[in-house]
Image (cartoon, rainbow, N blue to C red; front, side):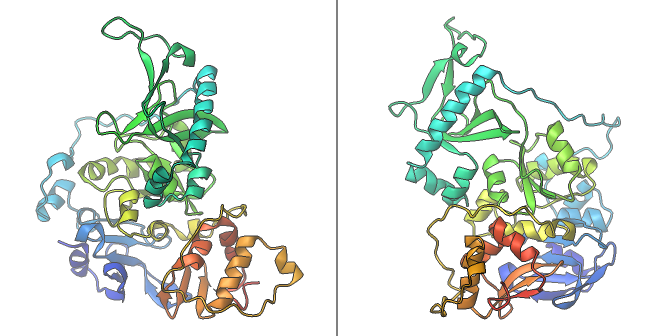
Length: 455
């Protein structure tokens, strides 16, 4: 049964959008809160997207005055009808299988103590740094690897900023070195020979903490062996991207975390696996944040593992991707990852103003079909405008060519629209993904920004 069907039994909902299967709004079945949007007038805080989660639907009560509850059809029955997890599955005729969890633990669980990990030995760091620098050069030469990353939403510029690399191996084969040369203890094989350090071919994913390299993980593309391999000697520390940001998306894969980090108001935490827990550093960052969107894989294992998060963080709620099981799959299915994250952020997180950053590396881009680029107007750039960042001047030029496009800049929302329709293309990318432009927009005094008043 869909979330929309369940919600309609409790409250009256109205359809407010037809995009991606439709969106419905109304008062929350739990707290009953509704609200007022300065841009569009009366609105309600409870949102339902019936087409999300492969047709089972998703709901969210906007935090603030609302309760902030969110989830799928199972969580709806738990939140608003008081069912246990087992009873909710039975109502929906969902087999428990690996989702089964104990409802009456025999003993009170021990308080969680986040692990603390030491940094690698100096020799390991020296060797790993050289390998990483070499692999970073190889990645920029490998169009196939860059294409694979781009298909997951990670363009070449983002790959470079994230420090990704490519290990092509030696003569097309995996690399082997003596463990001792990397400062690792000697290990013997079954044949009583010294075991070599295996450095497989593949995508090299680094983790740096406070400027120091502490881990190299390699994403392999061979059919045999593990898909992800952590180079021995590195630290199992939790990856946190954008630790200064007010909210965080929790995912499993480091590549998914890199993709999610494009949102300037939300950092990303990569666990490595659905059952992993954040280390002490990551735990403190999440505890001090203004919101934790738990986007671990949307499958049975992810559903069973979610229960730990709200027990640890009162501001954590389940936020699965609307298509596929993880952000990478969702991106391939056409999901706007920025929009998915933005929907889950509280107003306090959205008004965060990041520090202006340098314009990103330029890449070839195509204009979206829904933005028509008119012939350029006469150049009216003043000397003062020439001092502005290049990305802000680019946005100004695009807005002047598209006078019907409006950027709505209010505490409740930041959106790019034309004739009440969502606008994609380069304008959208600049507003949402360029930190310099976003900081400029958020600091702008106008609530409706066009090419006439941007500067």
